[in-house]
Image 1: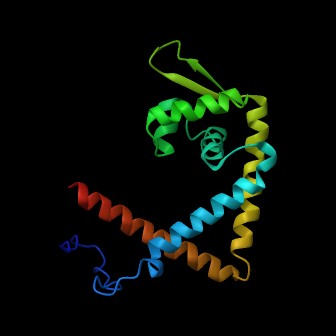
Image 2 (image 1 turned 120 degrees about the vertical axis):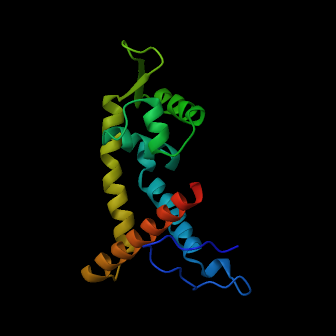
Amino acid sequence: MPKKPTPGAPPLATFYDPLNYTPEESVGFLMRQILSNVATQVEAELIHTELTNAQWVPLYKIYNRHASTVAELARVCHMDTGAMTRLLDRLEAKGLVQRQRSDSDRRVVNIALTPAGTEAAQAIPHALSAVQNRALAGFSADEFQQLKQLLRRVLVNARQAGKDDSE
């Protein structure tokens, strides 16, 4: 059943009709295809680091100081802590991260990159830039800015819809 619009929110769009909905033509499908393709290409660019897509994301988040504990990293990577612990086991086995219990709170596990982890993380923005620049081939600077602006609008709308669902 369609939801009522939130007061002050933009009017609900009517681009899709359930009677003739084609998933392959949906914005969500296209975005998922782009993300999947980019992830595969980034993984190929990072083959020399032996990092998988699942591994380079948290490694890069640690490198950029978006998280310093297992719980924070799980949250920013949208993973449960059990899955994050298993992923960190693999990164630790590769010698890229080290974990240490907090001295002040034994429940907290801090994460740090090793020198090898820092070196691997430094390759990530090069791979991301190369892959995304290839995907944007032929775009003008204005089109690139417009695309980012439109995607930000979709993101704001999606986040607002998510908030409305939880209320």
